[in-house]
Image 1 (cartoon, rainbow, N blue to C red):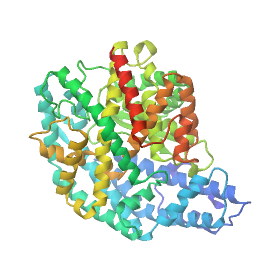
Image 2 (cartoon, one colour):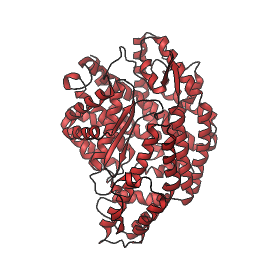
Image 3 (tube, rainbow, N blue to C red):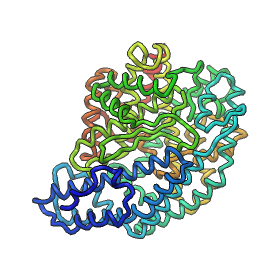
Image 4 (cartoon, one colour):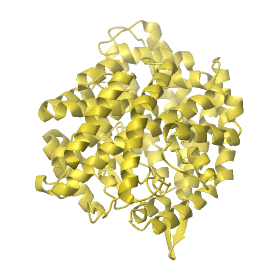
Length: 569
């Protein structure tokens, strides 16, 4: 087949127009597909998909690294609008050809299931709408990336204000919080306009696919076969019953420690919690952050240390915050090179260590699953992909002290561990707000197309799941909290994964408390399965249970609270 003449690197492929790609798709479509040719045909299709996926990842990354770079934005949008729709259409025909062949290669049960769903969901009319949605997401990033404020004559990004909030001067915390909040509220109209446009696009996507609502469409698109919206509602109730009271106990403990009458947004805001008094200096420079992390990963497992060392040598890390850089953190992958890339916004906080551990968990998942022969087998449900990252926040905990080659003094390491465990409990209610909000939005699509109604729904959910915070006088800032959650705008329904995965990660960590080596080996074994088995089997291989119920949540919260008591003692 002529597909052997395809480029071997994405850099040779990334700027190809569709007219240069189309003959390779046509050749695959025309080629005989039977048992004798299946391995070669799948290998060629897999290589073509790797080139496409790496091109997309590199263009998106370049756009995220500098949202002010108009050339990078134009390249990304040109690919999304002028090339990617044709790729999707051609890929659909290849899926249909493969499914019609009746072939069932080893390790392809889950990829075949996914292909059938995607083939059934595909509509040519949705391709320009998907491109439009990408463009709106790029605009959202641009708005957030441009948000800066002047603090004492110095320009700061919103991210760069975070370490300045970690002070025992409550008036200063309030002053900085107000500056940040006012700047974000200044873009309220812009984000509301984007939202209204996005809701129209999403409604049409579902209608074109013949589905009753966008949630039904998105559920299939996310390949959620192992749970339902009703399971999510069950999970919300478990969180409300078990995690919300535990979180309220944490808030009350810190209220007493701070000597205040009520918790205000600048006291324990989720984005900056916990208030480090005094501030823990985990590292001096980003280079220190990189190098110390390598020492930690080597202690967790030599293979992980080798993976991370490869990332450092090959410059696959972009860690430091800067003006114009897209907010947040993520791990992307370069499929042809079989390498991950970690992007984040380090600003000198001890929490940056946890973020790096998290994203490197995703990176290690990439290193493990790319050993599978076909690109189609690499795709793992995000519910387990986040176990890979969240468990990696916990598994290195024995090695974070300087005495073990890590970042902190022994006392600081205990304190960081307590803060991390408290954050897990505090996260579940916040996750429930975000996920329940999205269910409400797409169960009430027309109502939710008005941002004012979204403001009210977000406020109601916040008060249900996070009752200990007092936002009196700052109702607009509270109501627009959904503006500041990237996933709601760019990756709809992608958030419950974090809550489910956190429950799985705590179960992996529970095993590590008695058998660290065995827990890490089970973790790596599960990562290596990629997307070849269902979610419950992935969780079980890693040492956990895929669950939504109150009893499992109660076991996790009890373990965390007991461990916190031991560490504080």
